[in-house]
Length: 346
Image (cartoon, rainbow, N blue to C red):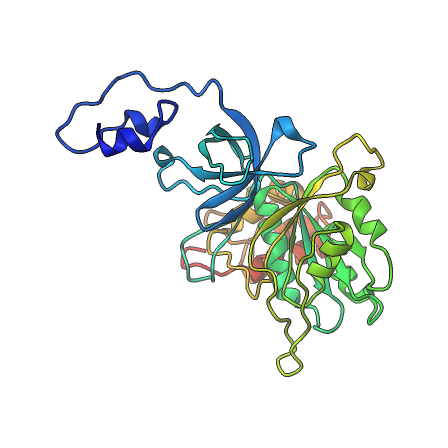
């Protein structure tokens, strides 16, 4: 018996692969995986994935799995809905195999920086991007917030601005910056229960992003008792937070968050603190498509128009002059547009 035959069982696709060159396949019949079970990826850790099975919604113990070889280099990320075979008992030492990744409804992407052409998928199948920013200690970074909002629109997700440390500064000025874009916002204080934040997250899959030190892990611990996410302070020299979380982790909100003890309370995805949000994969038209009113007005733009304020004959300026769109909304859109890198073809 070959090594491949000893390593894989009959339920595995690899059992039917050619073990080496110049040999014939053992059989042409491929497994159908009719007995595969559905699940959602909660964490990815060095080739091992933690998956919550859909038919065990009440089970606190996820299943450990690995990616099947036929999936090749296709990445499995947190939030992916997958199908598994093998040992799905969840017992200690058990290992299942992911054989299929379901089609993604949304994909949040970023690049390492604006010069990096390689897109990295942060999370899949989320419907809300919560941009966490502190009003003080450290000061809010408007450009980073803009870039996260751009990523949300391009991914087809709804942005939510969560302003922490409101006990240290007023949120009014920062809120006014995003009012014309229609970005909703919520305020969290360290000395109060985050009830308003919890209400915004109920029944949804929300991704929390933000720089280190803004109180993201503290917020997660308040929303999900027992999460035990490590928290850290702010460097007094640089004014920036210290990295604490190192992995993307999907956590269930407690049932009372939805007001229905038997219903789905929602999920939050905690991400490591970021210092940049690369948007090398985003073009002007990608962002414009998220603004249906401006997209319609821009249909009269000349070919190659990048919709920037200094671009001549941009139809957005004509639409403002004719009163078809608000000037403040166009200005806000152009601010987001300026937050992304300008490629040679823009």
